[in-house]
Structure formats: C-alpha cells, structure tokens
Amino acid sequence: MKLMISRFIAILILVIPGLLAMTGFLMMKDDVFNYISMHGDNTATPDFAWLHFGGGLLLFLAGMSFLGGWILTRDRKKNYVGPRFKEKRKAEHAPNHAETP
View (cartoon, one colour):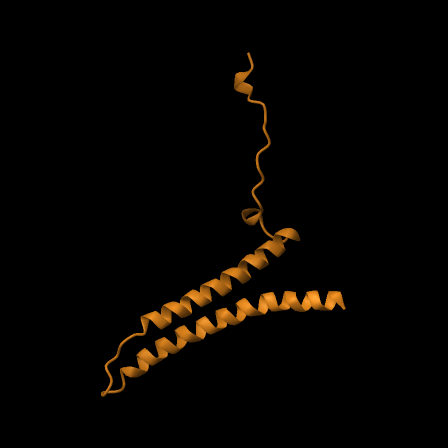
C-alpha cells in the first residue's frame, strides 16, 4: 500500500508541471488567435494581450523546465546521457610537476 501511495505522489509531481505547461501553451495560443482574428473585424481595434501572453509563457517555461530537469536527472542516474550532459566531477588534486626541483 505504501508503494502505491508513493507512486501516486510521484505521478502527481510530474502531472502538475505538465498541466501548468499545457495551460501556458493554451493561453499563448488563444492570445495569438484572438489577435489575428481581430484583424477581420472592422468594429474592433486589434490589440495584443501582452500580460496574458507573458503569464502563459511563464507557466509554459516553468512546467517544461521542471519536466526537462527531471528527465535529465533521471537519465544521468541511469547513465543514458552523452558526454556533454554528464555531471562535472571535481578534479582531484594532482601533484603539480612544475614544482618538482
């Protein structure tokens, strides 16, 4: 039972940022669509909802960066990443050969 609850919580931790990213994408899509559709209406003055679009962009970037970071961390643990994305290890203190007499 404890394993099932922990897996459910892990799924929620991944679903919530995914929903945030989806909501942000839909907000941006709606703003662009509304701006383009206003150009066909002679009674409306086209103006872009920058604040709403910026909020959608912020939600999208926050959700996608969380999911991308989680995937990168998981792949690093399983050693699935290329050398470019491997963790940088601290260089061990090597003796300096220039100091030897």
